[in-house]
Length: 316
Image 1 (cartoon, rainbow, N blue to C red):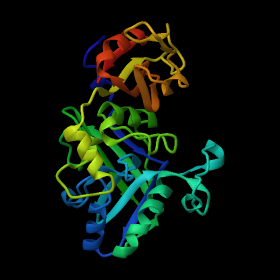
Image 2: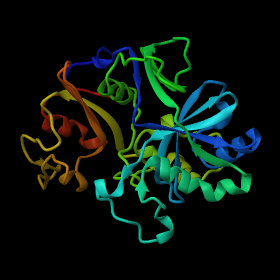
Image 3: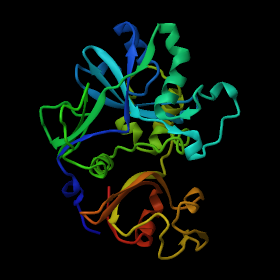
Image 4: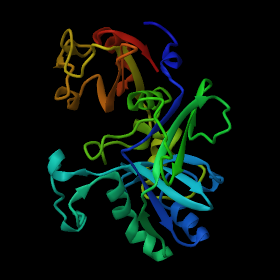
């Protein structure tokens, strides 16, 4: 495998994130802060004006319900989330509990976030309001003046909110934005297919979206127990491969150490107990001839998996 090419794949520039929704969190500032601190996994007290942080909410079992960005602007807090997809379009089964069915029959991060938080928000007189603001994502060199929500030694990612585009033109593509997020370890779950399927420590959220120094939130006890008492035998990896790699391609069957057949490298068999489980979406950078994706891998089986995957360039 080639080493340390990941930074060379990152392009600097900005993009209008058309699929992202801004949600105002309305209420008294101190009550909003107190409410958020008891619900989300990140530490709201660390947010300064015009800064943003990655976060998520979990269910009582510690499984991730929704992931998002929180930004503080003009002394107000806002959620930035991916927009809704239709139930009919994605074929997601209706919940058995009628109380869980949104009124407009939509399942999206924006809707589930409001649905899950509203029962608790009313006690703090906090409400949620979707806005028409546009979201601009920027990738810039490290130590740029903008407040980043994610960075490494080479670059940083930041979010800005505007009321209109003002003749704004994209200078990077959506795949380039997604690739930078993946390279810096930031996974965005595919909703609703992957909601309530993973705990934060399984998908790198413990490093980017969870504070272990704050007070309680829903699922906090289980998340903390996994960190301090659990034995982590799996590793969250970012794979950079040659462009021809596809989820449904595999040069040979995957077998375990005893030679037992575990399935082919495709989406259907990713659900089986195997060396890996692909998480999130694939990103193809056609001009670079590479494919980038995330997977959860058994640590002991990583060397074998490298041999089985065609065209692996680098694993982060």
